[in-house]
Image 1 (tube, rainbow, N blue to C red):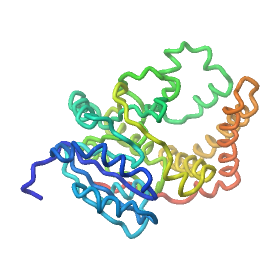
Image 2 (tube, one colour):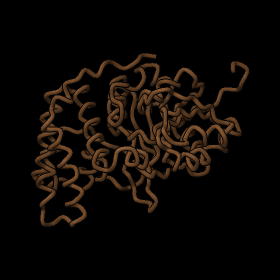
Image 3 (cartoon, rainbow, N blue to C red):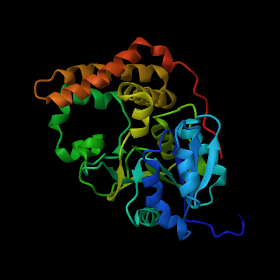
Image 4 (tube, one colour):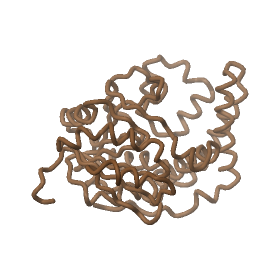
Length: 323
């Protein structure tokens, strides 16, 4: 391996129950792998389906690493970090499709902005709806402002900057978001070396929030390349594995475990209660559509379940692995 030219970026894909989507994902990055710009490592997390076999049979350019256990998102990516050689590390979900030239453009953008430790393209679904990947950390002040409708007194520009996420749908570059979602997250090698790896105690969801928090504390900025868009068919593998209701609950559980790690368990529990009240209000708000009220009720049910079992936030998560 020492005689091989160093790739610009190492792409790692963690697969679990992903045989319905991983072929399209890997095909989309194969051109940059074949020309040596990127290396591709696929981690099969003891999948019960044909994910590993598809990689083995159809993608000889990829390095396939098979784990005997499901290490989760964080553990899977961390497991192959020692094998990566690129200047950048692109963590890619198996349900993401990269447009032609997308990897090269993302790397060039990171090169142009050396202050960025982490970046992400914008993500869109099959109908080109924006995911708005640049987010702010959850906090009580934002939750209370939204719930009380006081945020409506802010200008649209101020709201977009203060809340980010769905409030900012301009599709342009941003360089000071709190975190980006982990579906297509590119990380500078120096940022990994200065802050450590993903926190493996967060098995699924919340890892991107906690990691970006540490990277920001180390002095790096977090950015979104809003004019570059990758397609993301979000949550397909998770819904296939657990079902929609269980996936939603696990998403919120991982999120609040991350905030318990970042700001303490009491803060996280109060945040759950405030957000549960906000979702209860939204779920019966007369100006919301029937579809929106249904979506809010789904989130409310997950929060009620968390409030009934607060002990899930009391388990010790552990510390991130240092490089």
